[in-house]
Amino acid sequence: MNELETLKKLSAAARSGPAPPVDVTAGVLEAIASRPQPGNLVFPVFAVVSVTLAVAVGLLAMRAAAGPQDPLADILNSMAMVLP
Image (cartoon, rainbow, N blue to C red; front, side):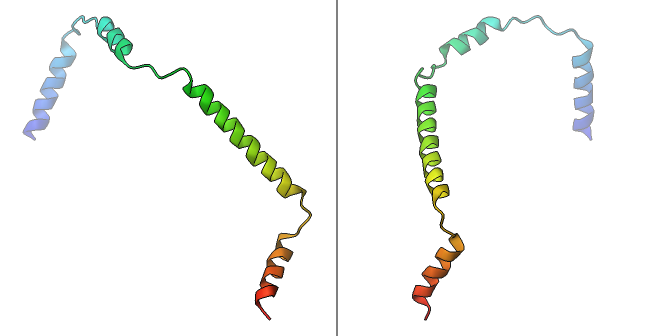
């Protein structure tokens, strides 16, 4: 309980005084500027790969949809070869 009372006193003391004027703009801008910037080709390369894969999946789906085969008949025919 002693810690809780101490925290309440610290909280009241922190609320009673004004916030100190601190300008952190220069430090934040310097930290942002010092970060390594990703290459400009990351997004376009990712977009090209995504579109290529989407087209390939679309073509495969169109070929699968064009086939008039019944999947149940295919399963039964493959089972008929194994079962007497």
